[in-house]
Length: 212
Image: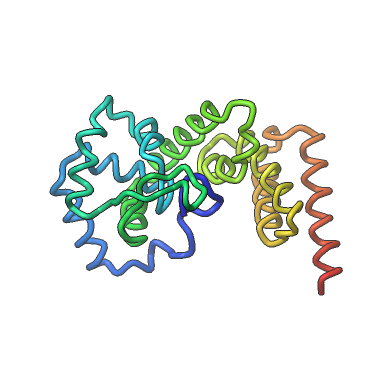
């Protein structure tokens, strides 16, 4: 679950975390100070594994990250990873998925949306005209913001990528999500994009019928 992959918050529902454990984690985090909490919360939006350079852009802590990271490593909340070995840009990870989930759950909905949008915008700027390469990541982030036009666009691109490798369940989920956004906000997609999404959704139905 990292910032260079399609999976992020994963399978654990936030309500599944025992309150006592959640309180224990947050009590430990709160001892570290406001800037440290915000850094960890920004990282939690990116996934279990994350590039610290991206966290720095998202958190906007004005150069403080370099002094906060050793403290977090010393406290055992995050640790270094070799992103090159796993084929991702991540260089840090939470020591446990429960830590990430708890920190993510501690964010208010507007805070989550803001951090997801900052992450998406930073990735778009970083990848430039190759942003389609991380369409699944951008779809994940924009789908959690009010930027419906961006969410639909990248959900459509991500679905096309999944269709090319016959990942039908993933493509269906992304297309259904895009159609739901369009239904709620028709102006977020033009007729051409809507037509493409509908055709791709019908293609999923056809292929599912062939495989059953």
